[in-house]
Every structure is written in C-alpha cells, then in structure tokens.
Length: 70
Image 1 (cartoon, rainbow, N blue to C red):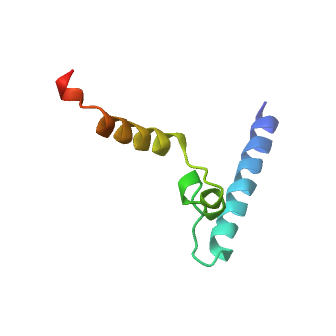
Image 2 (image 1 turned 60 degrees about the horizontal axis):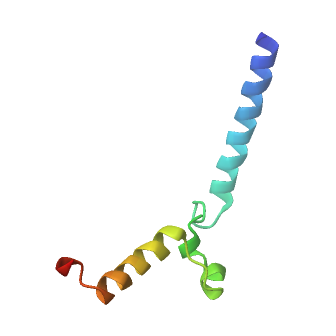
C-alpha cells in the first residue's frame, strides 16, 4: 500500500513540476484564459458561452415587453 501511495505522490509531483515549468517558460508567466468569450477564434465564428447568450437574450426580451404591466 505504501508503494502505491509513493508512486501516486511522485506522479503528482512530476505533474506539478511540469506545470511550473510551463508557467516559467511562457512569456507572460500565466495560463491563457479558458473562457469561450475571450477566445478570438470563437468570437470569429460567433460562438459565445451559454451564460453570456442567456444574459443578452433576457435583456432583449425585457425591452420588448413591459414586465411591470403584467
């Protein structure tokens, strides 16, 4: 059991070390954003995240109908 634990711990340590090397090697020293709305290629294709699309559609719908009069 101890042998398995040490193997897992060493694999995690190697993974963390490789991630640290990536951060040090990258010019800005940080990972790129994984958010769909911040990707240039996704914006070119007109793809947005579901949350942003829902927020935009709800605003447009509330402008079309007067909720206070209901």
